[in-house]
Amino acid sequence: MYKLRMRAGMQPMCIHFGHCGGCLWQDVPYEEQLRRKQERVQAAFEALGLESMPLHPILPSPAPLQYRNKMEFTVVPDPERGIRIGLHARGRFDQVVEIEQCLLPPEPANQILEYIRQAARQHGVSGYDYQRHEGFLRNIVLRYAEPPPQWMVLVVTVTPQQESERGFLQWLAREVPSRFPQVRTIVHVRNDTWSPVSYGEPTILFGDGVIEQQLCGLRLRISPFAFFQVNRLQLERFFGRILELCQPQSHEVGWDLYCGAGVIALLLARQMRAVVGIELVEDAIWDARLNAQRNGIANVEWYAADLHRAAARALLQQLPAPDLIVVDPPRAGIHWRLLQLLLERPAARLVYVSCNPETQARDLRTLLRVYRLEQLQPVDLFPQTPHVECIAQLRRD
Figure 1 (cartoon, rainbow, N blue to C red):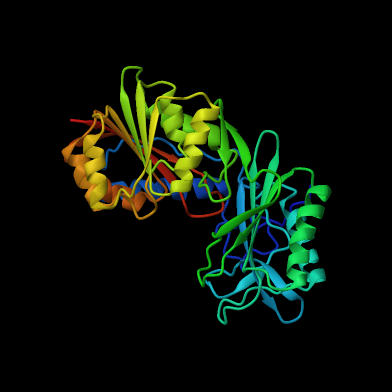
Figure 2: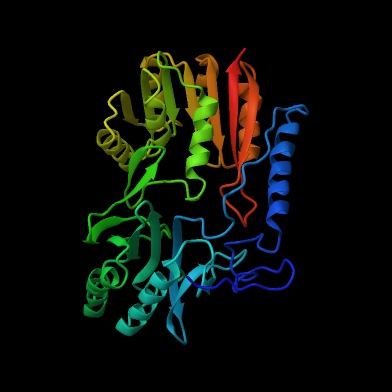
């Protein structure tokens, strides 16, 4: 394992700090990071007039470094070295800092990245120029799951045209797993659009195209584009705390809205009569169905639907009335159409999981017309950054 670069006092350990936009708080002691995040949650909810809110102390991450199970690196042209692979510069989306040693993922992430970087230069492949929209190699995404330790490597490019580009992909499939036995699969993703996202048409170059995470007694399949919580060290405690606040009962029906690959729905289904999972992304619902099958869980119904559109209202009105509703929306929060339905058809309990306490508090201002706030549990899933997760437990008045 590489050695962390230690400096005197509370100076940041990362050699890229100050230039890279990935870690903004490495110069802040971890206890102080936790205090600031606790205060951020408290301030968001005090704006609702809830000065005596039932706020629990934040759950710290077991470790503040080497916790991320997913890293996405951008590839751009470099006039001297051919290509540059790294992360966006602090406050700049048009500049990329070459990353030699990132402290957020476990090893051998840095070694894998460097091996690919050197091979790309040797093969003479070009980085993608986002201003001219030309070039070949766009992103390298590393995903990790355990146990046992497994890596997925996603190589995002435009459609290969030159022999050197095809040769580079063939080299990846042959040499990377040979050098790093923990690499379970390598996937080539073709993105010919102008969009900078690491999505596109996938082709498996090596392995079976998935990694598997063990979590709370479940074995979960993670496909190339599946959303999964990034703090690998906090997974058991985070989802365990969600389950505690849900208080599932064997005779009850639960809804998991914005369910992703279905982790919360599957955990609930082991303790409830029936669960419904709804998610916009069809690939995520496909993963959820496969995860249910491989774990022998048959009491979940899955639907691919956009909860922000009027058509979802008809779907929800046809479902069995829920005793428990779990919502885990994107950072923007719950869409007003869904909020209205949750008011019209409240459950006995609602658990709101959010990575944005400000939009969470905004939505609770509406939900508290029919619910009362029982508990708030902040969780640190993102050490070295200002971001904080929060779980809110509500009960119907």
